Length: 381
Length: 66
Image (cartoon, rainbow over all chains, first blue to last red; front, side, top):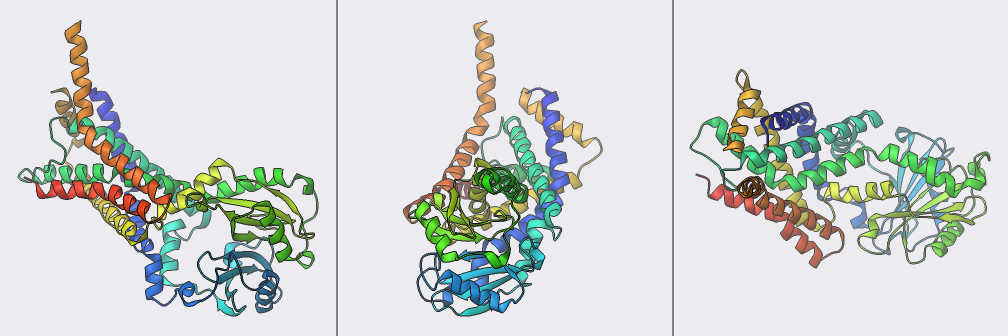
């Protein structure tokens, strides 16, 4: 490696890290409690699923039309936006809003028990975990905030790649895992930064890259809606949106969708006029029937007036990548041990960020050239 | 010529050498995280073992610090 290319990668590492460090520290500190979201909710008594007995709402229970009527009676004058099912308990949720294209902050999320038909009231909002999740997702700034954090995630991936490139020449004369504890404070910090960074590299790359993909959720969903979904429902193009009063039976629509995608379990229904459907359709999203494909959703588009199937088609690769990115980012798919690994890796990431910041704060005059010389000397030896 | 080629090979090898263990840990992590997605129980346990290898490597290095 030439001194020139070492200098290039050093500067990439330095600047991509410096620009993103503050955001990344925030993401680590908020991400740590989010790993244990389920456990914290259960401890705070907000685990609605565990308290309900009966078959999962995705497979059985009261008719969907009856559940929807109960929901709309609770919110007079509003229209249904989403209905979502649980794979584990009778919990069924209905989202309503003042109009079919209502923005997220105008929506109301209601909980129901599909086994008994009982209304469980509106979902609790404004809790500590909601605050932490919003901060982690979009800094309370909506889509611009998400895209900003996505850009920070991209810089993180760049910092990881450039750090790994510099690791090779730096470690040329040192065995793996070297920690020179008797040397200066700078060498001690640098060795720890390099070691922790390189062992956590795989995890940080996965969580960084999937975080970037998750940050692009809104544009990726919009591109599916304007591309694939529009193509699936081309014969409806140009028709006026269906009025909520003309929505037909949900149970008939679900039966038609299940006939098209047999053996699969529904996850949620996007009602006409929202971001997940057209102006005319119930978009019923089904999970795959195997562990890996259970993360991949396939929509069946059912004419909301007649209950007849229009089309059922897998989502494009980019949307599938987005769906697989969620578990890989959250670490919630392998039990408590995996969550503990996620937590340990998050703490190591904080350590790498912190030691990186210390190395920069303690820099002397002309530090870039001296650091580049240091690596180039080992590389040339 | 032969010595120059050998020299180049040695130079490449010594650049690659520090990357052997990191690359193994990286692949173990990726394999663990993906295997955990593909099933429960046995696959989850395999995922834990693979994804915990980097933590083990770190603990060993820390125990041997000098």
